[in-house]
Structures are given as C-alpha cells and as structure tokens.
Length: 514
Image 1 (cartoon, helix red, strand yellow):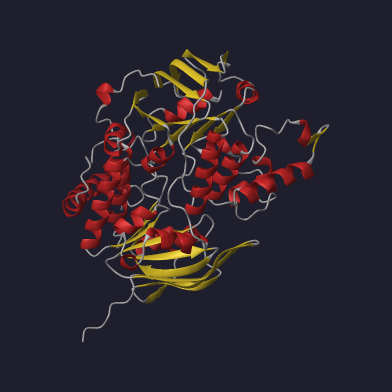
Image 2 (image 1 turned 30 degrees about the vertical axis):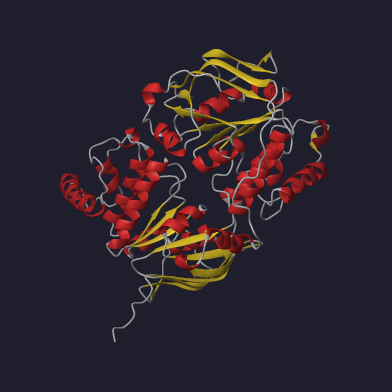
C-alpha cells in the first residue's frame, strides 16, 4: 500500500499576539500537495497574519511551520523562498520602469555578469510560459502592462525562484472578469503540474469555483476545515461570521427625485499631469445609486477626487443642488464640498482616507476635526471624539473596537470600515464611494450594502465606483462604464459590462450623459 504524502504546507499550533490583540490563537491547518486551498475569514480573523508567518514576515510566538512534513525555521522571506514558498501580494511589488525580464531577476541576479543571468532567465521564462500559459512579453515595460499581465509577472517571479507553494492574497481585487477567468485557468494549470496554491480571498464564489479544500478562520482561531465539494457559500459565510448571512442585496425599486449632483464635460488631470477624465457628464438624483463599473486605473479615482474637491478641474462644471461647486485642488476646497453635503469614501483608503500614524479616534474624525464638538479652544475634546468613534466602530463592527489604537495596527478591511463608517454616519446628501467593500469580509459587505440601500431610500444621492461587477449589478439603479477616462452608459448585462470594462467597446465609450 503506497504511503500517503505529507502535507506540502502545515501550520501547527501557531500563536501570535500584537499587544492586546491575539491575532493567531493556536492555529493549525494542513495543505495537501497539488491542491488549491482556500483561506477565508472576516477582517481581523488572522488569515494574513498566518500567511505572513509562513512567508517569514512575522515570527510566531508559538507553534511551528512544516514543509513536506519536516519542521521549517523561516525567519524572513528569503528563507521562505529557499524552501519553495512564493507569495503574490494584493499590491504588486514591481518596478514599473523595468522590463518584465528585469523584474523577474531582480534580487536573484546571481553575480555581476547580468547578461548571462538575463539570457538564462529568458530561457526559463519561455519554459514557464509554455507549461502554464503565462504569456508575457519579457521585453515589455511593466508600467505599460494592464493589471492582469502585471499579476502574471508576479507569478512568474515566484515560479522563477522555484516556488512549489504559491500564496495569493486577494488576487482578483483589481481584475476584470475576463482577467479573473484567465487567472483561474493559470492556477488550475499550476495545480495540474503538482504545484500547491493557497488562496486568500473574501469572494466565496471564487472559493467554490476554484478550491479543493477550505480553512475558515474566525477571531484568530480556526472555525473549521471543509472539502469544497461538501459545502456551499451560505455555510461558509455562516462559519466565517458565526451566523447566517444574506448573500444578496435586498432592495426595492428606486424612487429618484431631482438631480442633486450634476457634472458636465468634466476633464481632470492626475497629479503627474496626465489627462485621466475626458469630458465626462453625469447626473445623480436623490434616492438613487448610480454605479460606475471599471477596472482600477481608468480615471475613476480622479473622477471621485475631483468631485470631492481634492483635484482641480481642467474644465467642466459641477453643481450640487444647482449651486456651483468649488473648483477643487486648493486649500479648503474639500472642506467646502463637505459643507455642501458631499461625503467621500476614497478608493485608496491608505493614501487619501486615513493617516496610518494617527490613532483610530483621529482618523475617525478626519474632515470634521475642526467641528466645535471636538475642540476646547486649542485642545481636542478627547471624550467627545472617542465616544463618537467608538459608536461608529460598534455600528460598523470594527475589530478591535479600540479608538486609541493606531490606525496602522488595524487590518486593511477594518481600516476600510473606519473610513466607510466615518463618511456614511454623517448622512451626506451626496455620497461619493469608491470600492466600498474592497478587502472587506462577507459580514461587513452585507452591512455596508444594506446601509447604502438605506441611504438611497432616505433620499440620498450615491455615486458608486466599483471594480466588482456583482456589487455594481446588485446595488446600482443605473450603470455607467468608465474606460480610459471616458464614460459610456451600459445595459444591465454582466457579460457586456465586463467586455466594456476591458475596453472591448472602447470605440463606443465616448462622452455620455447619464
């Protein structure tokens, strides 16, 4: 009788604390070789901490990691790579001005004779591309590649370094549906070639479509291990949050009123001077959600920032309830927009939504920090600040609910909850919201969606930007697609919208009024 192979990767009793936060509480999981293993859980459940211990970013307080059944002392990513572990991060670690080939060999040049290294790497990439269908031009400049191909470069980097175990953190967060399908094909090809994949994702549909087995974490502990074939999305969601979860958006018909936000022929340049929004026109009415679908990098961020007063308008007009809005891009413009009743949940929470070095209580009042309620002359009224932020934390299930904890110490999903809670709890007349549930767990997604619908039903005007087609389709009363800075109206057909997001109808995506 053949001997059963040991797990390719095993965590045994992993324990890790960050001060008062018990991030991993005796966590154990085993990943069989040649499988795709899903790792799911709420924000702050400990998934990323566990994988960062595996990859050598963190040192566990207790327990051990085993590779192929043998204990492995992994103190840094270099040692993880040496043991055959690769990791593709949610935010790619690439040098944009370098070619694909140069990015792949960066850090493993192997000596001063770079020409030989590049020639050897070129041959290796050709072989990897043939084996796994990872077609990328090795001489292309990475900064010129679309997001899906950049992700392939990250996978090639890991495989070139000999990764037999590949960890992917939220890999489809910035991909079009077509790019996501292509990624799934690549991951299945890796599995077919006996590579092992660990997939961290909040998207249960991906878990059901792609994985062989799933580990569910909740509050730093393992809530269970299940074979994917023996479960479904509803059961996984209940395991993640400890209760039943509604996996659809419940909303009635919209009853839109007058236009609250009007935009005419808007053109906006980014901070580097590139024209990112091209003659965009739209109107958002009271009591409706207008959705803008699109892959990140097509002008949505600049559109929202210009409407929030953070970027100047090159041309075009913006009106709030018929009154001209400030041009933006100057001191006080964003504050003036807030006084006109505009709230803004930015796409990039870390760059424009929070200050990582601040306490959560300070990040939780940004934009209102000058309000009289929060000030006692030259001093901050800390009891009032902490009481309000604690209330938002409780309402939006921020974990841990500690206003005095530094913002940087919260998980990405909990940082998103702080921003969403801060902006939505103010009850603005117009809510500009970008990627509201990016990196957020299934329970918080349900809560945020429910609150957006409640705001719509209360007569608020909501402009929603999301790369998640499911989210756009479920929440929006009308839909536009943004590609290469231009807006085009879209029919409520998922396949057609996905094609437009990828530029499949770019020739038709000219100036449009919604």
